[in-house]
Every structure is written in C-alpha cells, then in structure tokens.
Image (cartoon, rainbow over all chains, first blue to last red; front, side, top):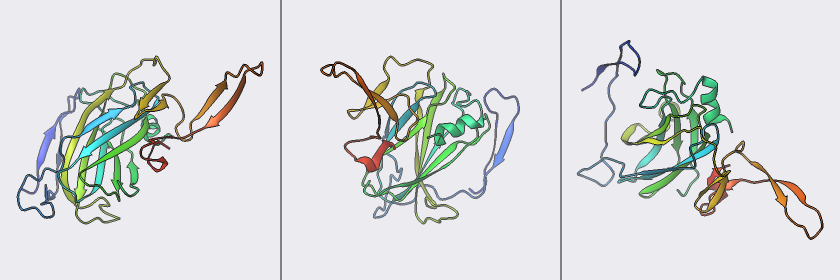
Length: 102
Length: 146
C-alpha cells in the first residue's frame, strides 16, 4: 500500500474534505535483538494533571511504558479541538499563550 | 531519564480545521519507562477536553528533516485527560508528589507573598520571595515548572 485517499467531514461542518497521503513509512519496525512480535512500542501508560481551572497554570505528567528500548524521539500532539467538536482556544493568541506564555 | 531531553514546540492552529500543537522531544535515555511533564496555561475556553497523542520514533534522525527519527514505533492516545472547567478553586494550590504548587502565577520563578505571623515583635511583617516549583525527587534540573 502506498497512497491512501480518504474523505472526511468535520464535526458540525456540512462540507466534505479529502486528503491524500504520500508513500507511507514503515510501521512498527523490528526492535533490536527481537525476531518476533509484538512490536507495539507502547504498553499501558498513565496521565495525571494538576487541576482543571481555565486560564491557570497547570501541568500534565505522562508516564510512558515501552516494550522496546530503541526509541529516540517522541512527538506529543495536542489537538485544538476535542472529540465533541469544541474548540479549546478562542483565537490563535490564546493558543500561543497556552504553550508559550511562560 | 539520565540525560537532559531537548524539546521544541510547533504551534498548531486554533480553528476547527487547524493542525494540532506538537511538542518534539529528543536526546533522552530510558530503560522501559519514562516520565514526561510539561507545564502550560489551561485554555480559556471551558467545558472542553484536553487530550494528548504521543507518537514514538526511532531509527536515524536528521536535524533538518526528521530530528526525532525516521521510523515510526507506535503511538498512545491520552484521550480526554481532563475537562477544562470554569470553577474557582476552593484552594489556591494543588499537590504533586508531596510538593504543593500554586494554581495561579505567571510560571517561571513564580513570585509569592509571604506573610509573617511573628507577634512577638508586636507587629506583622511581610516579604516577597521567588521560587521554582520542582520535583524534589528528581531535582531542579527536572522542574515541573521552571
């Protein structure tokens, strides 16, 4: 499989969009020293947070558990819209202040 | 972690079709688990859920193209970690690992007002102090907020 095209309609939006991938990268590479699976990478992980009050300084601690030891980079993606379609930020300035306002 | 991790932020876009904000972390060592902490200001909008999707990479890194590695090694979704609320906290602080942290404050070197109740001198005194919030088990190099 190389290219995938899919259509989607965002929550609360009447318009359909589509996007097309380029060649997909290799998924779940073989860990060093292993000849059989599973190669999932993550085991169960947990998260804790400080509080829930809006506009206040907060923290999130993620406890990540792996089944491999050759991970060299992590990318944390924080969506700007939750799964109910609600925007977390009223404008771009608030988004910037959330992550770079300290 | 036995080394200091390096992080950078790629800001996303706020609207409904916008890209998520990405925090990239590299140059860390671990055995089978690791703690990742980051501080931020909660969003202004309330009744919204805060989630984080973590993607792991390995292989060969390239400073210009893929600094975190070229092999995708799985992902984990922390879906709806908490819902942002409009509540006014009953207390002005919360506790993590036995360390009490203020809910409010500008972040780095948070300034607090310390009032003395020393009545033996016949008067109350006040003073200002600056401090960093950090995990006492990990040391100041692993500040929760610093």
